Image 1: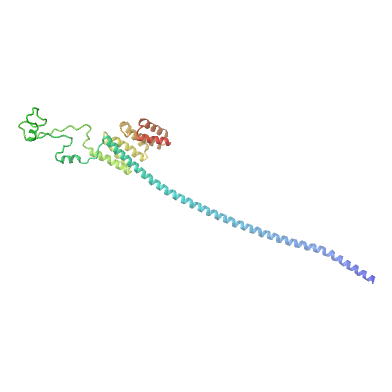
Image 2: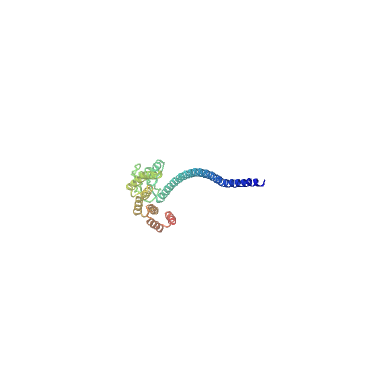
Length: 318
């Protein structure tokens, strides 16, 4: 029994050896296929993850763009609101400026009226002479009182008086005969007969200036100066010509008009204001040096005037 067993054992060993030899390459082949499959699966997962990341990035970029447009829209709305608010403020400032200019014109007119009263300028005619003539016992215009006539003349001399006859008394035998009235000479500086027309022309031009109708005011004052060059109102009219031209931005014309005032009426109280107006016009023309020299001349020549005080303030601001 020993002999047959050995071949069987040998066959079994050989069979095991053959199986081991065959199973080794097969197992190795099986491991390579599995690795490939896993690699492919991993690549697919990576591709999926990459695609998901790209999709998420695209979504984020879209959201960022949308958010940027929203922010830009909000900023535009804020700018619009600021512009509307600024427009409202500009309208308010324009209104306040117009009111300030109106108050300034009224102040100028009030000052001009007061200066005319101080200078003894003509006042508006109110028919005062007619009312005096109609009043009983009132003196006629010009202050001339006619001499008494009739019995009043005879009783003008006290009884027993040795003095000569009263001037204007009737001579003897002429009782009841009125003496002709002798016109008194007009006082020095009396106004011409057309003083009422003169005043109306000046007031009409001044009213146009007050209303802001500067071309009509300029024309009216120029006509006044041409018609009444010797009038007490002529310096004021010449000054308002320059002011009206300045209001129309005709700065060269304003300078010429104010210089004409200074040349023709050097003693007028309007001369300091004329120099101030010239300095302002020069500054508006960009002639800062000439403007400063004019204001310095105003301060030097008229240091106590209100115009000099304004000139000092302007020189301090520049």
